[in-house]
Length: 142
Image 1 (cartoon, rainbow, N blue to C red):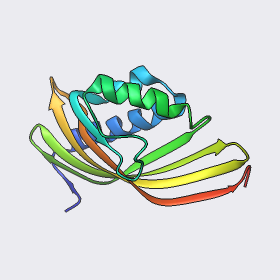
Image 2: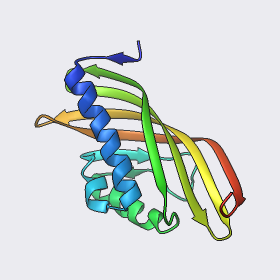
Image 3: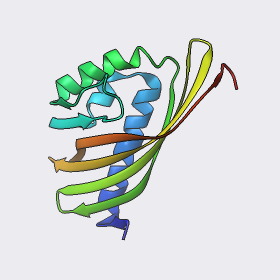
């Protein structure tokens, strides 16, 4: 079953995902970084220019540099599955990003496979693995 566990935990995990997406749109490194556990891991196998990162500070540093290439990004995310087991959870989510690069408008869609951990009553991403599903590059504005 794709959604299991207490409603309160599933809602808190959805809030975590929404907080992450909001921080991307606002390019807010502090808020974005606060969604990650201290010992988290971030992987994006389809983007070799962004190697896997371990630890919140390394993850945030990579993200700050990466965001320089995605000006004006609009980032949306929604869960396809949330499964809670005590203080651990797995989540699958889908993303849609729109941003301009030079004379093109980029539309990227992807999937995150997440592991989450509850620490001190709060949920964090402990591992996120992103895979690209679809990319569309069109003349700017289309």
